[in-house]
Amino acid sequence: MRHDQAPPTQRHENSHELASCAIGTPRESYIVDRRWQTPAEREISFLKEEAARAVTYLHEGKPFIIGNHPDGVYRQLAPLELCQSATGESKGLVAVATRYNGGKEQSFLGLPTLTLVYFPTPSDAPTYCHAGAYSYRAGPADLYPGSVGTLELVIDHSSGLAQITQLQSSAKIAHPSVSAMLKQPGNSLSTRYQRWPSRLLELAFQHTRRMGISHIAVGPVPDSKLPLSSFVRNHSMICKKAEACSYARSKDRAILTDTSIS
Image 1: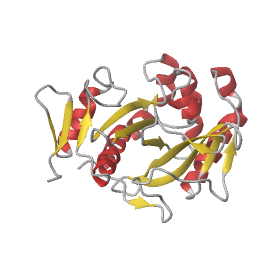
Image 2: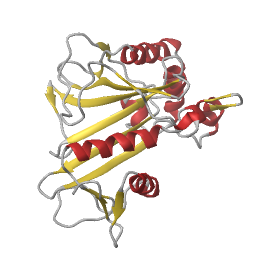
Image 3: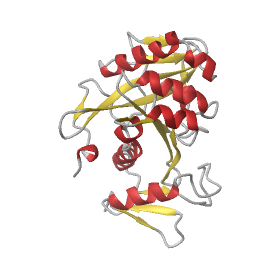
Image 4: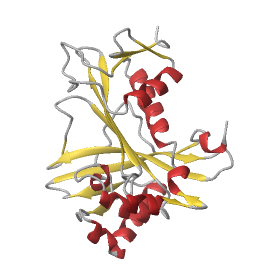
């Protein structure tokens, strides 16, 4: 196993089990209430410094809130797992995000939802904050400034199916300005955090197993509340990782079945 493929080894003492999905409002949170929507705004050093402070809070084992707290729409992030290489080098952190509206937890189309967000180290957060300004609005870069990427999973208990509705990078690597920021010779952040999709998928599969869900939809499935109308984005990546985690694909390639659950 290469160093950059070593699994995360350190978990915060107060991290929340994925099976619950609900974090609750913490006693003490770092609150970020500004909107970071354009490259010009993210050039402001204060905003990039604020991203670093928020990510530092997570690395210290504390949650933070971003959005219009407490009366509007906001997202609360709580640290789940510190990620390290085999040599002990920090590879960032995974957090669980919970969406609230007026203090009430919100779900995805009424379905139980798990949202995982991968953050870099605090020192790399300002760069990702700026790089994310060149990505789509209302995407991970806007929702979770300074993040590397996100995964969202929903579960339809009535049909016994789960679906990964999002596996998306916060930075549009194909954009020339972003590529220049993240792929600097000798200090490529894209290389440093290249395992983020793999780790988030591993955690998502662990979650479905704890919930007793053995089937994951990656194609159209009738009689389900899942919002799937076509094959999911990053279909090949999800299926490849699923097969490595003991899942088998159905003949029509629409369902992944967990063979580790008897």
